[in-house]
Amino acid sequence: MGDATSEQEILRAPLTIGYDFQRTTGPVIGAFFTALREHRMLGIRDKAGRVVCPPVEYDPGTGEPLTEMVEVGTEGTVTTWSWVSNLRDGQPLDVPHAMALVQLDGADTAMLHAVDAGSPDNIGSGSRVRVRWRDESVGGIRDIVCFEPIEGGDHG
Amino acid sequence: MRDVAIVSVAQTDHRRAVPELNEVEMIQPVIQTVLEQIDAKISDIGFTCSGSSDYLAGQAFSFVMTLDAVGAWPPIVESHVEMDGAWALYEAWLKIQSGHADTALVYGYSKASPGDLPRVLSRQLDPYYYGPLWPDSVAMAGLQARAMLDKGMITEAEMAEIAHRSRTSAESNPHAQVKGSPSVDQLLAEDYLSNPLRKHDCAPVTDGGCAVVIAAGDRAREWADNPAWIRGIDHRVDSHNFGARDITRAPSAALAAEKAGVSDGQVDVAELCAPFTHQERILRNELGLGDDVEVNPSGGALAANPIMGAGLIRLGEVANRIMAGDAGRGVAHATSGHLLQQNLVAVLEGSS
Image (cartoon, one colour):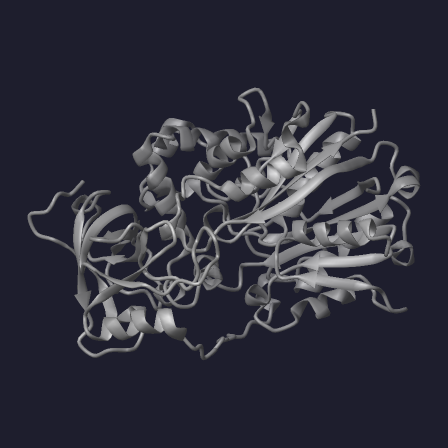
């Protein structure tokens, strides 16, 4: 692969890049984010009758526009999880935590977020968790700080 | 349909980091080799198509710079996909099918080493619900592995066996980055990287690339004694909304395999692009490959995983085995996005 230049001759410089897009949220995602500000969770009913949370604009099966917003619970069940110990900038928590898919009570699908479980021993598929809200709204999914285990709940 | 075949394949010797070369310098020798192997010049090529990522290169339209490795004067007809080179091959195949070209040069490459790859890959996720959480690609894959473990579709020991088999196979692959493996018991004694995944469950971070020449009909027969004919090729995508579907399955892979005609004949060899051990199990299921099918004799993505090149390499590895007469009919698979979201399947066959 060519002549390898010795390591100390390689010029290096930091490169910081950003993709600072502004995005509109539209009537469905916008309604979900507005409800988060009020510490409420919304899903949307699809053509098969399932409640999809977070809500989507179009039916996952048929592609038809969806409009019927449905309030769901702020507690739910972990359907799958993994443990994050190599923390990276921008993630919800600055301590080791779980990433999990959480199916909120009243919803038929799951949402991704962090679970502040403290240790992988404190979480399992089937664990019960509740939303931890952010005090000051930031206008998006990060109005949810994370989920946290419900004390005395089933650890799966 | 026109008969179109892969006639030449070249790839880098894959490494964790190639700091002394830029992307142009890294891929140029590969492009030179893929043409020299068939005594072709760029003027013999009717269409050039590449796959690479601006997010990894750190600048917009980075592929334009890489065209210096091809030589774009006199002017050439070219295109680019922000995807694995396997999709660039698909575009080139369409170009030839439509009669706008008889020959094509296809390449895919990246240098992942300058950034934090698992973090960069989080930018593939939707910008409202998933992306703002910056979930790294290993933790994302862990969700899928856990769901499979919970369902009893695989065990951690079987995952380690896939890693061990792949990297042992890679010992005979001169281009592989990770060759050889500790025993399965030793692998299972390691700590988790991102529970339930251990380091051996994950593809390495790689700088590298691959180039392929495809040609139609008689041109293919001129360039290769035993061209690897593309008998079927198809790509499909599943929803990015992972929480709303069964992530232990990849319906798009099954559909692509059906459309490509995988089950229409015997499969002598399959190269599956599974960057995580458990994903090989999903793909075997979805493609309907029996236990008798040899999978990833090259070591697969677990032995070298240049993003935007690893899928094209799978096509190249199957083609090489067919052109060498070691296999009569083979299946190649490429993937894009998290959790096997998008999948391409091709069936390659010798002349026989």
